[in-house]
Length: 216
Image (cartoon, rainbow, N blue to C red; front, side, top):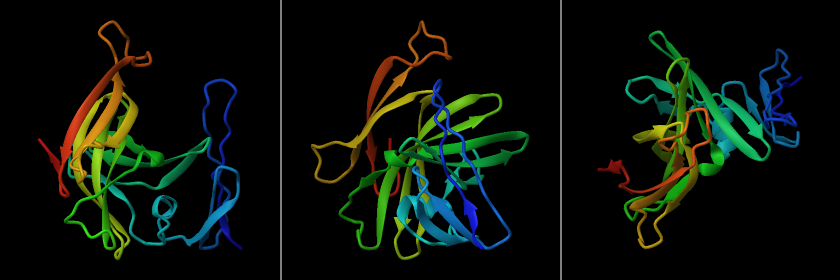
């Protein structure tokens, strides 16, 4: 028998909330389900669901994100569909602090550098958020390297974006042959806005990046 992890979404008429449903038994295999309930892949229990769904890699290497301001590595372990959008999340504990890191898979931005052999690996940027019990939600841009041979993701650098911002656009500056600048557009809360409201003030930033880090 197969242990089935059923990743289905119930989109409520009000609020658009998503609910995950899991069906399990004592076997070692895991079936991953897409937004329509179709089986996408079957893995052994020690293989990463997130790496399979994000990069189509069957691997024992988890995707770990460095918790900003600490040496804690947070493993992305859970998947959630909201409509056709796939989210990956992971819980963490840091002292007395408990929280979660998450990202939207569709926001992944591949970057091309002359020094990087695309057959061996890929540098990419992707926004992620950190939320905890007391401080709310903080948004970041992460820089990562995917090693095709090792089937492993390494966290290279982190850029702080803001507190409870709303991402609008993430793309490479079309004026550069090499992807050394990223255009990040997002919304922040205006001076007269409460933090509970939807942010409405648009901000655009050009972020310089190398194959190893964000450049100040």
